[in-house]
Amino acid sequence: MLHRLAPWRTAPRWHIALSGGLDSTVLLHQLATLARTEVLPPLHAIHVHHGLQAAADAWPLHCQRLCDALGVPLTVMPVQVTSGASLEAAARSARYQAFEQALAAGDVLFTGQHRDDQAETLLFRLLRGAGVRGLAAMAGERPLGQGRLVRPLLQASRAELEAYAQVHQLDWVDDPSNTDTRFARNYLRHEIVPVITRRWPQAAQTFARAASHLAEAQGLLSELAADDLRAAATPSAFPWLPVPSLALAPLLALSEPRQRNALQHWLAGFTRLPDTQHWAGWASLRDAAPSATPVWVLGDGRLLRAGGRLWWLNEVWRAEPQGVVDWPLVGEPLELPGNGQVRLCGLAPQGRVQVRYRQGGEVLQAAGRGHRDLKRLLNETGLPPFVRGRLPLLFVDGQLTAVANLPAIGGNGVDLHWLPPTNAQRLR
Image (cartoon, rainbow, N blue to C red; front, top):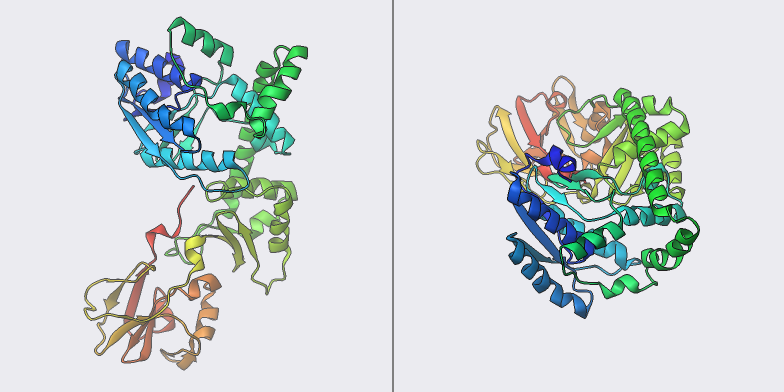
């Protein structure tokens, strides 16, 4: 195993996802054994306690005893599993959120999925009509939070893990829910895979090999997507706006399959990807009239079209700030509730200074142009509509004096600099 772990030997810390079952118990034992003879990063085990069944209440103690015997510290992380259409999916989501929280920058989390798990994943996703990305099944390693998730046992079969456990006299727990065939994966494991294996004994190995081929194909598609996105990844006219965006024209020059491939690659960093039917939303957004402002709602945000660009907005951008914020010390930066920070450059205005947001009907004294309607001035800048409701406006004694980050439309010698909230976008 040591050669497979070589890329992560310099990580600050190694974590092991320890359920107490066969796979994670073998993995923990192998890593703890290696640590006795090799210089490895500090080991740490994590047990996520879902609390979904009475039997699970004994597992943290079992894991603690196992870790104590091997000299590996353990953290037990209770989680709340939200109810929904799929209990399996909800539990998995809660589990990986806990793992993300536990990883510091550069840390590695090892999980115990094996070759039989990979075969089941391929079958499961095939039955759901997954594309190449889904059929590539579980990656050997991928980003997770600030660190990496690594699956070092994907080339080993469950039978090989059982043999290892017996040789080393390891004790593990069996999850009663693993025999409940109401769950899709258990049905495949207990009802379908045994039938296939009786006819094709090497089926699990063959399925895993097919998943590897598909992962290679997905890698090529990702390279193509990166090339296609390069032409679209031009900076917007508003470099201060921390919203991911793409130029639309280069994407429209591609065939429809390449458009979808490029967008899948780009959106994967922000949201759960849409299924095949949901991709009709992309066609509607793309083909809407030039004067329209179409929106494609996705799992973790929305894609908008404005000013010849696509803009990705997460849920933070849905709620526009409201109210009036007094600014008694104009020489100091001002924190705006839920909307970042503003500071003044240039002349300090005299009088009562406030920051407000658009209500409609605002008028600004524009240098050399007299009083102008703010809506028209913003239209001239090409500022995307979704920003305008969040744009801080500076009022002095009740008069609109400056617009954040757009000093050219005022020309009053007052420059209001706005730093939008740093949490406005968060990569998945």
